[in-house]
Image 1: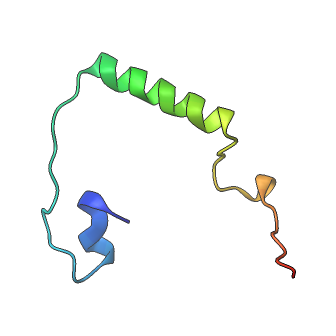
Image 2 (image 1 turned 135 degrees about the horizontal axis):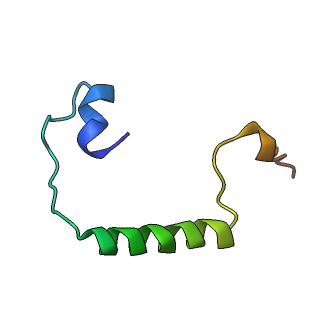
Image 3 (image 1 turned 60 degrees about the horizontal axis):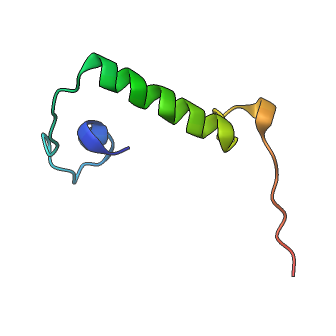
Length: 59
């Protein structure tokens, strides 16, 4: 975890060590659609057992 939630998982992390800035709703929506498209085009799927695979390292 990182950002605002980090202190909940890391006892050494400083609380309130993050910054925020408002974003217009339309800009946020456009960024979300771009990110969704990027994930789909690069086959970055949710962490599910349905799409799991094994990597075998050999010489």
